[in-house]
Image: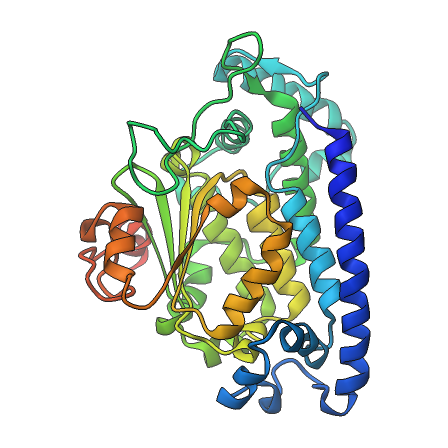
Length: 394
């Protein structure tokens, strides 16, 4: 249930921290005016090892955003907004259903009610959702949101006998009645956020439609793999060390948005992700602060983060960060102030020398790791993107 008193307490804490951040950012702006970048991709803003030293301390890290045409207070404000919506919320008056068939009917009714006008009907037709590549229907999208709403957000499942891997798996929420019910209203609220976000980027994803073939050039630049682990969870591997960062920064933001829209649908339409959960493993390859922050315009990056974290119906069981530069360690230490206990429990840091041991504990062994990822001990030759989609066009 939505705890209003707790929410107000958190908001008061966030406001105080935002005031502190704003003061620091104001100091940073006045201190760095002469060093500001006129354009995010300007060569002088790409950073080097000297600049990396400059952003390794908390104060220097917060100041550094002024060089990117932003401020730490703005980043914190956006981040708090995204994190606050990750799990959604439940109300006493929410509509609930006893099974997926009943829930699907109730969700269809809610959608029909809101899509009463021609304009609304067009938005809720999901015409820009890339369903054809995955052989899915609108009902499959509805089902993904319903399954998301039924996961118990308060259980850590650390003693789950069905999965001993770090993060465990999704479990259905048990309500006071003892029944395992599906919160249809919660699913609808999340679905509405999805519709609104897809509308906000409609000009980028409608013409031409988002398809695997259309986003393949971006996938060839940005190194990602998708596979299932020993527990049947979906694992999304991001490999910055194998990514062509210059080509990625040079491509138009619309192409990056299109790629992430396609990838996000692949993730949340996967049955393993829906029923067991998602694991994200990011090999940061010690990337410098300025290279990382200029991969995308900041607002585009924040919009994609919002889409992946607080719009799509995905329950992430573990976020793994490896090969972090000093600035990335500082960033997490600062941003972790805003994470709930459950979120902190779902973050795993892998230090140099721990790759093989911890990755085995996270996914279940080399049979579940791409061959060229991390330490190179993986055995997966072809991931789900290659086996399910690449063969259709090559």
